[in-house]
Length: 196
Image 1 (cartoon, rainbow, N blue to C red):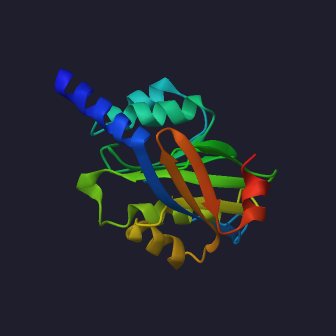
Image 2 (tube, helix red, strand yellow):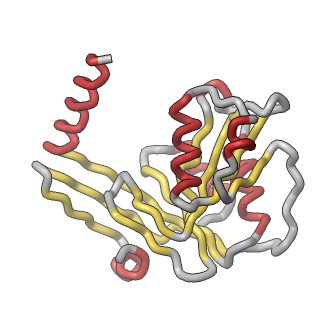
Image 3 (cartoon, rainbow, N blue to C red):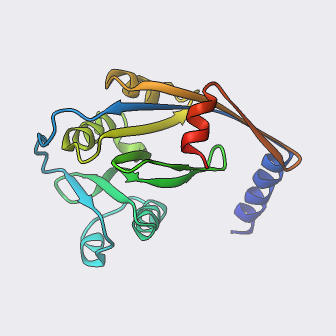
């Protein structure tokens, strides 16, 4: 246990000394308004219902705690479950959240939503759960525009974003050297509009 604490301290120290992230943010206009493909494996949670959460199986306590944390923040969480109610994937939806990779809070305008924390358990990767969940969210068309971001080096996530027709709005380069952080963006107006 103390070894993990030491590892965590070392990681934080290294990130304090130097961090470099390249984030891409993309958007898509909602279409197929009101046509949500029914998928009995996808569950939408908007409020923390402990009975429902307790009825599900999580592969790790970290995943369960992450879902509960997002619900407590007011986010909507889409869970992809197998037939035994084991959580295989989750994606979150909100109107504002801190993007950890760049340490900035993104704010959506009324009627728009930000999709984030799309996570598939390792044992279930390669089964198309992320695209299925993303398709479900987009086809529900509850919002006018959807925004999504990922680290540029995450090629698998970028391929899914590209396949759905998202349009890249900005590249944000985040640097932190000895605790002094700054960002450079490819679209200053987008950055000013969404990061206040």
